[in-house]
Length: 128
Image (cartoon, rainbow, N blue to C red; front, top):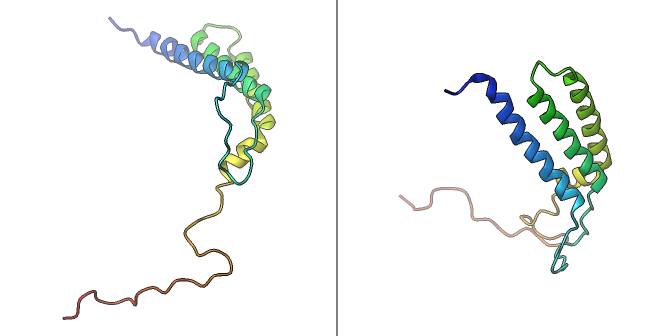
């Protein structure tokens, strides 16, 4: 029979796997076969040490989930995870800002210096 007490263990294991994946992404070298950048502006590089801090923070949260209420260092793990998460976000602040704010130039409007194309008049499509 499935016991309710195993739910935090399962969630903690899944969170730990996510934290290990973030750490692996930070520590393993990136292998890019081609580096043809089609963007007008160069992408902001992420901080690998900041990404590793975020991965360690996720592992601290996973340890707190797996430890449940019986582990003595639950609060310490959560505080350490919070501090590591804030350090990781601070280290990647430029990258995160560019990912959220920098959406590039909109291509819907007319280019600068050119007149707007004329739109058809508003009204019924077919005469009655």
